[in-house]
Each structure stands twice: as C-alpha cells, then as structure tokens.
Image (cartoon, rainbow, N blue to C red; front, side, top):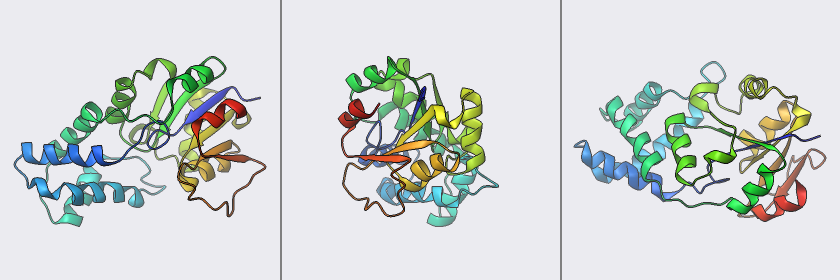
Length: 221
C-alpha cells in the first residue's frame, strides 16, 4: 500500500530552464566577471552532474567550482557559487508544472517528499517561493544525502522516512536518475514525459507508469 509519494523537483514540480542562466548573468556582472559567459557557465554547471560518482556521491560546491574553472579556464571563487545558488533560489521565475490542486489532492492522501539532485540552499527556497513548502514533509537534496542515482543514497532517504519501498512511489522526468533509481531499491515509479520523448525501451510497465500531463496523477494515485 502506497503511503509516501516522493517527487523530483526540476522539470517535475517546477520548470527549470532559462531563468537559471539569466541569474548567472546577473551574478557574473555583480562580481566583476564577463556577464556574456553566463550560457557557458550554465552548460558546465549542468555537466557537473556527469562527474558525480558513487564514491563522491554528494554535490559539493568546492568540487563544482574546481570543475567549472577547469572546464572554462577561469578563476571564479566560491563566493560566486554561493551567490549563484542564492540568486537561483531567490529570483527564479515561478514557472510551476505541478498545479496546486493536484498537490492538495495528494497531500490529503499521502506523505509527500522531494528528492532532488541539487543544493539544499537553492531547492528549499524555490519550494518556499511557490508556496508549496507546507505540503512536503521534507526536501532531500544531493549535497546532504547524495545523488539519487546511487542506490545507497536512495536507501538513506527511505531510512529517514522510515518506510519500505513498497510503501513509496517516485515521480520524476528522467529515466536514469529517477525511474531506474527508484526501481533499483524496489520502488515503483511514474515517469513524467511531458514532451513525449521517451520511447519506452527497457521500461518495466509492471512497476512503472508513464504520464504526459500531471492531471493524470488524479487517476493513478
């Protein structure tokens, strides 16, 4: 019996796109760097996820800074990273995918959580900005709990919730880091494929479902 619903955040609850990059532009300018490098910076920050591994599974600001400076041949400081995370959390445009009526419906039936592959200081603020913090019992972030694509990190989250995999379902937009990760510890999952880009290959329909609109959750959960 499902008691807990765990959501991904970016591109599942909120839309994560150009607003982040424009925040980078403003922070670069404020700190005396070339503001026109904001798209390059955005792309490298996205790429940082690819170097996270099982032995170093937590997002780390200093390691991300080192990765950025190496990739872009820059000399950015940790202050820039801190200000970027603060700006993204504070000034990000409130573009919501998961409508509040759906959240309220689920809130009345389940314990709701978020597990996101990014930094707590940024992600918690974004949920507060859209007024959703009151619906979620906790937001688990990769700088504290490790990235969700690693089994032992996902298990750590379930241990803190104090539940078994059969009592949880995960909802996210990425097959590898969301659906496959949940399945690896015995959880069922729902893939949010809003752009109809997933072809269903290697998808276990006995464990999982695919939705293209969040309203479909009302008929599933």
